[in-house]
Image (cartoon, rainbow, N blue to C red):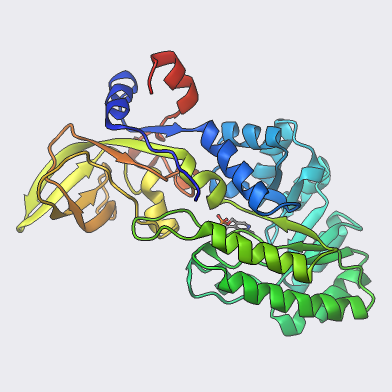
Amino acid sequence: MNSYFKLSQETVKKLAEQYDTPLLVLSMEQVEHNYAFLAEQLPGVKLYYAVKANPNEGILRKLAELGSYFDVASDGEMRLLTEMGIAPERMVYANPVKTPSGLRVAKETGVYKFTFDSESEIGKMARAIPGGSVLLRVRVDNPRALVDLNKKFGAHPDDVLHLLELARQQGLDVAGLCFHVGSQSSSSEAYVEALGICRRLFDEAQNAGFNMRILDIGGGFPIPTITENVDIVGMLQDIRELLVRDFPDTEIWAEPGRFMCGTVSNLITSVIGTQERNGNQWYFLDDGLYGTFSGVIFDHWDFELETFKSGEQIPATIAGPSCDSLDILFTDKMVAPLEIGDLILVPNCGAYTSASATVFNGFAKTPIVIWEEVRDALHLK
Ligand SMILES: Cc1ncc(COP(=O)(O)O)c(C=O)c1O
């Protein structure tokens, strides 16, 4: 069982008094715990943290200290890590369709490991970084993932050998295969299927003379949701056993994003308005869809709202602070009746939240404090 970070009511109150709301509280101990948990459950697997999930520098620094590698998707992420002193050998540029500036920055910073899934990408990589090491991303369908990335990415297994051949002809170092089963994947099924496909493709490629030595099993590892406490230990055990059986001599990578950072943050937000419209109860919060709750749209995430209130729950519409009518977080969310000034705690909101927040309408991005620092400074528990 994996534990996660959740502030008490008393602490929420004290932090709101001290720092005002909205406020994101980020636990570095939880980052450490998540990294250690995955490293223990997937021994020998190189963990490339998917920076896109939460590029907070504190998280990146902590993971760098712990020995993590990094999955980067853009010029900006490569620059950020390079400025932090993280070596290019610790990065994979894992965006199947790379921009000209991304390839330029890869060359400048020395990043030489890439993923790709199409013929048109091969020449781009070969011209920018001659001899670069490449993993071909294979499509694995998984309708059970919360975010199905395979609609957009991944080469069909039938095309894999041809693409590897074209990459070799252009002088690239064909190192292996990768896949991503989709984000918040709630069972091991899709991994099991993907590993089977990859084993077959490894055999075919090895028979064709390729030195297939790396398999990247991507991200997708789930965190608890409101409705489901997934059996992460069981899932990782299934994956681990298959890796040992079918890929004993292969270097294995993974690209966890959500799992590493999803449980590290708590949002404290306040009720700033209440209204009854057409018999329907509305509550307005000081953080919204254009802020930390951007994950409602981009990540299809259903956030837990801890109101610390008892009493009969009613269905309510919960909206953000902007003047846009799109800024509605939930309809028919069951909550106890709320009043202006009530504090709401939102746990498990570290992934795909602040990373995609905007300053639309002039609302600043929600400030972030480090839990262990404020805990010690304010003598909190
Ligand atoms: C290439 C790649 N790797 C890793 C991740 C991280 O996935 P997750 O947060 O589900 O672990 C993503 C997410 O979009 C991705 O696109």
